[in-house]
Length: 146
Image: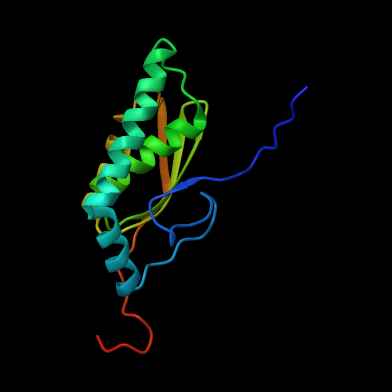
């Protein structure tokens, strides 16, 4: 018999994103937002995201391409999709049986409007909950002139 320990980890678009989808969200500092955006648009990070999505899709196709996908795969693919398309976002993604819950911040209403559409593009996503995503433009870093 093999035991598996469950770990409550969610996929996040940045290290500053909420650690879970129920955590209160705050506006990022300008420095944090800039670093998050630089990380997300780097060639290395783009290649990592594409490779991760490709590997998960290939594994899914080998198992018959079923629409019932592992929660961790959905979390990772949705996170990658959001990170690649909304690079200044600080989002956390949780998935359970095809229902994806997203929390965190985006800098504009336009980006908030794109979140559910981008998540729905991932095969196996049945429903998307974005009620804990807030529009929160970056704020000045403390002790830094505006």
